[in-house]
Image 1 (spheres, rainbow, N blue to C red):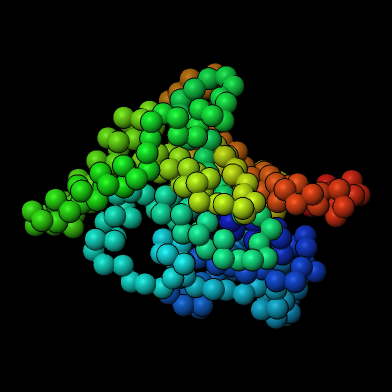
Image 2: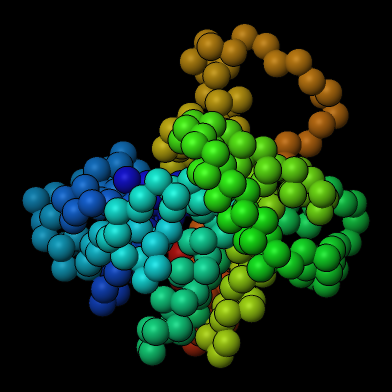
Length: 295
């Protein structure tokens, strides 16, 4: 089961600061059943457990509905992908397919107010200064259908040649990296994130969409408590390593600015974006002290 790091922080904050909310429907979970589709065993929920004590489980049951599924599947379904589908997901990028499936599902939710998509700042490539939106929206010559055809053709050729699953994964990964660099993106991650954005903009039709582009998401700054990190993946290794005595030194330029943003700041931006998109910021959080409490 996978749950985004900033998503965990988001769920905890919503439950903590808005306990009177009606229902939080968790759809975007990779899980085979409702028992495994949970993030509430996380240490981040420690304070809430202390607050609600024996009533914590009943509170969670009342406020949260867990819907196990897989956002890499159409309609966030439960299909077991075959070899070709698994390889295709790896090659073309889960970030791309998931974005497409989520926006298509969102269009079927008639009471939906806003869809918030967390992308990455690096879709704008390596540029300095002001980067206008039109420079990120596909004017580089990228055509999604063409990229899909390139990936499918390469995949079919490898399967026809009898390549092993390991060989196919490696070859397809190299292919997508090559395509990414051809358009100016440094790696598969930002390439597929960029395609995901384009798909959302192309498919969204009349639904309201907010796209957030944080840089590298790191441990929390203040809330729920400082320096919390769910694991030691990515850049968190650089922060936790010295504290654990595992990283005695780090070679680098002392003038370098780390391009990171704390997870709780990202969550605050998500909440404000939702409220502003629905013109609710002033009507709901009219009191300044209440807004400060929320953020």
